[in-house]
Structures are given as C-alpha cells and as structure tokens.
Length: 279
Image (tube, rainbow, N blue to C red):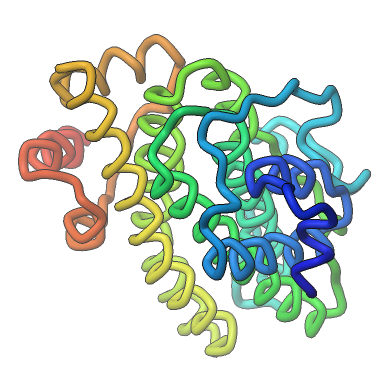
C-alpha cells in the first residue's frame, strides 16, 4: 500500500490515520492498512504528533456485521480431533487477533502526550496483530471457512471501553492482563493441535506466542513508565486497577517462562504461583 494512501495530505498525522483505520469495517482491509501504517511511520516517525487530540467518533470500533457477538458462556467448546472443531478454534483465535488490532490502534489515537516511542510501539503491535489475523484467516480458508462464520464474544473491546479515560488502566488491564492470558493459553492449544496432526495451525501459534511476548513486554514497559511518573507502586496499583475496572480473575496454569520474558517481575510471578498452588 503506497504511503500516499496512508497520508493523503502532506501534514496528515499518524495518530489520526490510526483512528481512521480503527474505523475500517472490512477485516482484510483493516489488517493491510495497519501494516502499511507501521511501514510508513517507521520510515517517517515525524508523522506522529503526540500533542494532537481528536473527537471520538460514534462508530468505534469498525467491524463487520458478522460474527454475531454473544455472551462467552454461550460459546460451545469443540474438540480438535475434527476439522470442524479446529475451524471453530481458528475462528476464535482470529477474532482475538482482529480485536487486538483495534486495541493497539485505539491506544495510538486515544491517549495524547505520551512519548513518541509509545506510539511507535503500539503501531508495531497493530501491524503484528494484523499479520496474525491474516495468517489465521488464510488457514481458516483452507478449512472452507471465513472470519464471521461462527459467533464470538466482545470481552476484549469491553475492557477497552472501560479504560478509555485512563491510559494507566489501559496498560495494566489490556496487554498485561488480557493479552498475557494468551501467553498461558497458547502452549496447551498448540500441543493439542500438534497431537491432532495439524502442524500448519500449530506453526501459526508459534508465531503468535513469540510476538505476544513482545506485546505484553510493551504493556509492562509503559505501565511501569506511567507508575514511575506518578510515583506509584506498580504492584498495589495493579491490584487497585484490577478491582476498580473489574478485570477477570487470573487462573492457572501460568506460562512462567513466557511471562518472565514479557517483563513480569519475580514478585508478580510468585503471586501467580500462589494462585496456581491454591487451585
């Protein structure tokens, strides 16, 4: 995608472009545009204007009419031994990655007055989530399905809505809570796919886990940056924010190695180990 498509006007701001892409409803177009924006901004970081503020449109996030969004409890789990069951799983993963594109773009446009590196980090995340979505969509097509064919839930975006006015809460509760759960979930899912002989899908999980460690590390970086700026203890602050914004309760098993690589400190890992032992 040519840079002139990303920035039609000479003075266009990358953060405004992120908002425009967030409003994009067609999934493949959103993914392509997110990747192109990252490429353009890497080449020209001056396109980022940290001080800019934008009115929030009423159509966020841009998404297609399907999948139907339902309560998580109504989603049935299927085994991975059948192609039908694996298609449902791939669709659920694609839905997570589609939402993750939106979450990263939302962080870019919504929160002003952060360092330029904050916006660069989340533009990179948006591009990598777009790549994950594209990989899963292509694999789903090999099963004869497309994104939208199965119902899904809206838990990720609901947390984005709750934390829309608080960048500290957003960093605490999206990357280092919701996305960090993916670090725990990926290895057992990958193992079951491999046991079912679906090595192509398992290889996609390898890519996702590798990149998601980096995404959670970015969340940890900016959460601690913000805590330091306000002289807040990150551990007690996290607990307070999790309670205030009704974050989901953490449950094991936990991927301690991945969480350590993603920037969780030893005190946090010991607390998680306590939760794991208390099951």
